[in-house]
Image (cartoon, rainbow, N blue to C red):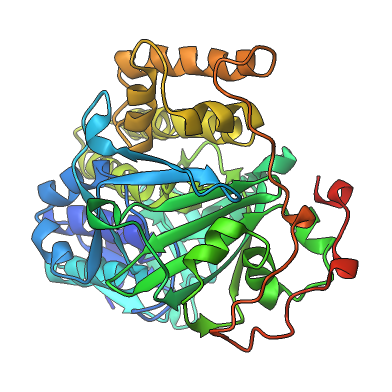
Length: 449
């Protein structure tokens, strides 16, 4: 390890690796400090089409596509008690989207970190940043178990750890309870998926308590998860490691697709709240990826936001370090890019938890090409900013979501409550027998609110 670097990057996930690739290729001395050793498990396995252009620009598309993956041409949405779902193709967007992929993040993230090494970055795995000891313009220092590491600039790509955000007390959770979530998930074999070109469609199945994801990762492996409010999970007399099975046993559509699935009965858990660490940049640092902000994962935007934002920030950092732009200008442009890129997703996320949005979205038709505009937003076509033709249609759609509450623009749908369903076991899931609750143990519908 050198005594000092041009850029120190805390975190070697997609955000940190992307920034390292761009900066190292530009000739800067780059150090990446990654707390884990790759490959390591991570969720966020469904990628948005906008990412493909960036991978192509970075010269990484072919290498990524050589990894095991499932081609993704669109997505599927529906209610958890209705096998009639809405499937849409990204090609139907107002801004047509290309095909993309679902992939195991352990493989994808390792490839990106390896490419950062190949570009010339010094990568240190198993070496987390313990603290920030200096944060000044053109002079930064962080502490690790092996000693201090200094540089001219710090890029915080530490994910939910938000190294700088916590050090400067910038992290703010959203108080809206609908933005407070916990996810229960696991990988399974032989989950049923749609045939043909729709096999790679990530499926979202909605219920009043939250939603399920079903994402194909290979020919046989599928990621299944259940996202709900922490308050609801706490109201259940169910171990957190068995809560996915509790939910699947009560969801007719997901249960049907998993009727021949095999896998562990115990699930993994990720609990975090949607947050922001404004202003995202300051003297000596930029925050990128989940270290800057974390959005509800309903629309699979995490990796795209991380990579698009970090590539843009790396270009700004390079210009700043060369003296081609001022630090103040670079920071302002960084903040603007994050705000513009995340704003459309925040709006969709907030709308998604309204039942009127779900009624309209599953119906899938509407005037003025509004459905195509929403599909384009879901494909990530919001960088460097949301085009006007998407923006005004998005606003019109928001109005329709409001109006749907009072006047039926699309057919009414009764909310689906997991707590009102009788559980049915999945006998092929290891150790599941006896893990589902009896009807007498079910919480009331009021507890699910």
